[in-house]
Length: 186
Image (cartoon, rainbow, N blue to C red; front, side, top):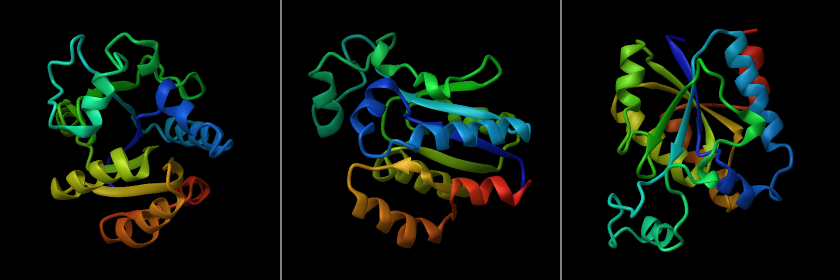
């Protein structure tokens, strides 16, 4: 299995609020992932998206982030960017801030992983078609081993979520449920 780390990506107050009604069991399942990882002494790495005041890192050519910049939200220190309290980090956990969709883009994630000799990532987060997909693709190109926890990911479009988990992700990652993953190394 290599040296593994659990990545909890974009599980921030504002993002969770947009998905809260979609799956009421999501946060408890994610909390279970974090609990299992800590029980196995695996590092838990939280990835958040946040921007500097004035959004100097956001181009008007970037449709998604330009729209965010127009709201005045998701800046460093904004309560909307805080990690959801149901899966709050501990002092020993690492928090990485990114500036784009992939967990690697504009962050020091690769440095953190390599400095800890981590070669395997267990991916969770919101959204499946956003941070999970982008991170999986980039991580695969960087030769990381990957596992995606299917029910610890959410997407606004259930069909896109299904297609990614059943048809796209298995080409580059092992896809398991939270309980399958928890039972695998128990």
